[in-house]
Structure formats: structure tokens, C-alpha cells
Length: 628
Image (tube, rainbow, N blue to C red; front, side, top):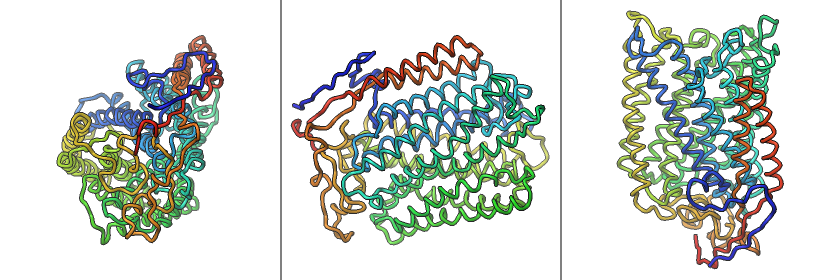
């Protein structure tokens, strides 16, 4: 029987100890449970965004339709964009990182478990608060970019803009907190022997992504605060009647907005770089180049923001400079494509559903990259700006790039999370519907855009050549919808009756496959020790690498002489998040009593959090006969 030693400290609330049931999820600080919550929440928000997209496509299926009003259409495209960027795709990468980064580096948890829980709850509650706007006076209708001066009280006196600002501000707090947590964890908590150049590529991508978040989110946060001050206290940051320059919003937004593209896509690059070598049964081709190119992308991602503003009149010199930097960033991105192709070349390829999503990603992302080069030319952008060509471009990059990868990652890591396999046959059926549906939706939008169809329009007249492209695009949503339903059915079946997966069903390379499926709550009975890149693979296949084969599990060392410390659960991350959200409602509705009371309650939770201590207990899995 395991022994444990409770670490008791005085606390304002009794320390929760539930291991099962709803309360265990509300108070958990376990990185794996929080990773699952992130992934499920992201797919929930993605489902809502998909419904919004489907309604928009139904509206545009034929010319002159009035299925939804212009006001509702404005709310739908705003919420669809905001949800996909801030609440679905980006948090999905963070969710996978939450679950797998500690396992991949041989750690036990993130460095700050309660901060990790706080990051999740402010993200989730901030997103839910944004969606309550549909029932509390109207959702935001200003586009996902929220351009000023559309956000001013004189132009938009409703509450939708306030929900946009507060909801994204709160969710951004969670993203920034998680990014800091990932940086500290990756730098300080790697297994013995895991140097930076022995880290899995996914861990590298998350480290770079976390640094990008730290530098990209502050400008956007400043912009949010300025608009909140304008609308709540009457300041004049973005009020043109008072002489302000609303274009400042565009600069601050795109200083965040273009790095955000890479914040979304770099985790996908990392996932591809784990799946392609596994299913090619070869080491990743050009590992150091892959890392270097990602670092270059991160730096250059901050140097291209004005290519979103070619038509604002910045002048030929500025446009030329940002056009050149936009061309240049395609080089390190293209290098990665060659790395993946080089890995596949000559490999003993196993065409699993995960690998098929990887191949679809390479094709789709390359097409998106080509159109990206096109819109990086100011002369072309002057014609295509704010048309459906741009809509098609960024859906190929962010939708096809990230979403297809994440679906492949679900198939790849589902066995580790649940201990069960997804059905490969159903997976491939869903794959073909999703990929064919995706291209049927978005490829015709290039042509509609080239014919001059502006984005964000609720309808269009007949007889100008747009009917066939819009009909095809809408028809594609039905195809893709069938695929997503089959995917969902497969996941539910996998949870309920999937075949046992074993610990390492793909004969994979990284350390998460060296522990049991699903992993125990302490991740590893002993901390693994590594002596090479892909140490677990090298141990299983010593003939493929020129290193001494060492089983990282058997070479492991005890975490602590007193056993493995498991941090205690806590109510405070959830309570602090609730206080922030309730206080935001008070500010939105000018209810100062509610705002002040919430402020005091937040301070109370911070004190409670600080004096609660780490808590927890120590476990000795070796006495339980636990093995990985």
C-alpha cells in the first residue's frame, strides 16, 4: 500500500481532496486533467463557431436571401472569428501542451499547478462571458479585428463591444499565465540528460510559442484597456471627434495579430514533427534546422504586421519594407516543409489516420503559403484586400493548417489519454469527408474574391457571377459537417468501447509513451534519464541511432527520498476567476457596487491562495507495485 504524508497548513477553506466527480475537476491542479479541460473546451467553442459559420454559409448560398438579418450576420461573423482565433484553435494547442509537455520532458507537472488552473478558468469563464452577450443585449458586431472607431460609444452604443473587450481581456490573462508557466517548466524541469538539443520538437515549438505570447499579448491588452477606458470613463484614445487617430488600434492589433498566426501554427508544426517521424519510422530530418527556422519565424513574425495595412496609406517605402519581410518569412516556413518531406523520403511509412492528416496539412498549408506570398505584394493586396480571397487565404493557413493537424493529433494521442484506440476505419472515413469538404468550402472563395466579392457582406445580387462559387462553398459545409459528425462518433465510441491501446501503440519516440496509458497522476514512478535525442526510440531500436541504448525508465532516478510530491487541490483559482468575471459584468453594466465587491472578493482569494500553501502529499508508487 502506498504511504503518504499530508502537509497540513491553516487555510480559509478546507483543502479539497476529491479524486472523482465534478468537484475533483473544479478544484484540480493536475496538468493532465487541465489539459483535457482545455481540449474539451476548445472543441466546444469550435462547435459553436462551426454553427455560426454554417448559418453564414446558408445565408450566402443563394443571392438575395434573408435567412438572417444584416445585424445578426454581423454578430455571427464577429463571434465566429473571435471564437476560432481566441477560444478554439489557440487554446487547443495550449491544451495539448498542458497534457504532454510535462510528460515529454520527463516532469511531473507544470511548475505552478494552481496558476495553471487559474489560467484555464479565466480562459473558459472569459469565453462563456463573451457568449452570454447573445442573451444580454446582443453580441459584438465589429469583426474579429474590432477596428476603431467602430468601437466608440458614438458608433456602437450597445454592449456588444464591451463584451468583446472584457471577454478577450480576461481570456488573455489566462493565456499569458499559461505561457509563463510553460517557459518556467520547460527551462527548469527537464529530465536529467535532456539538453535543449535533445528536447522533442513539440516542446521546442511550445517554448517558442510561449515566448511569442509573452511579447505579443501586451500590445493587444493595452489596446483593450484603452477602449475600455474610452467607453467606461470617457477617455479619448480612439475618438476621432477629439482628434485621436484610430489607426493606432490597427497597429497595436496587428503587432499582436500577425505573431498570433504563428502562435497558432507553431504548436501544429511541433505535432507534425512528432507524428511524421513516428509513422515514417525514421528520425526527423534536419532537427537543428527545424528548431532554428522556428526561432527565425518567431523573430520575423513581429516584423510583418503592417502587411495587413497596405491599403491604409502608409506609403510606398513602408509598404516595400513590410512586403520584403513578408516574403522573407516564407523561407524558414518552407524549410520545414522540406524537413517533413525529407523525413518521409525513404521511410517505412505507415498510413494511419494521423499521418493522413499530416499529409493533408502539408498540401493545404503550402497552398495557403502561396496565396500568402500573393497578398504580401502591395499591388495585389490593393485589389484583393477585404475580399473573399483573403478569407480563403487565412482559412487555408489557420484552418487547414492548424485544424487538420489538431485532428490528426487527437488520433495520435487519444490512446495515451484514454488507454483506448480510435477506430482507424471510421477515422479515415471522417478524414476524407473533412478534407474534401474543407477544400470545397474554401477553394471557390479564392475565385469569388478575385471576382470582387467583399468579405463581411450579408447578401449579394444575382447575375454578377458569384452564385456558383457561393453555392459550392455552402455545399462544402455539408460534406465537412458529415466528416466532423463521423469524427465525433468515433471519439465517443473510442471512450466507451475502444480497443485497449497498450502503453506504446505507435512504437513512438518520446517519453510520454514510456509511461502507462493513461498515465498515473504522478506521471512517472521514477524520473526518466535520457542520453540522446529520441532516447526512448533509441532504446527500442539501437540499430537506427549511433548511441548506447539506455532504457530511460530503468535509468530513472527517484524524484525525492520522501516519495513523489503531489500538490494539493484548491478552490482559489476557480474563485479568483469568478471574481474577475463578475467584476467585469459590474463594469459593463456600470454597476459599481458589484464591481467593487468583486474586487474585494478577488483580493480575498489572492490572500487565501497565498496563505494556503502548496499542500498535497507524498506517494511511493514502488510500494504499490506501480510500474510504467
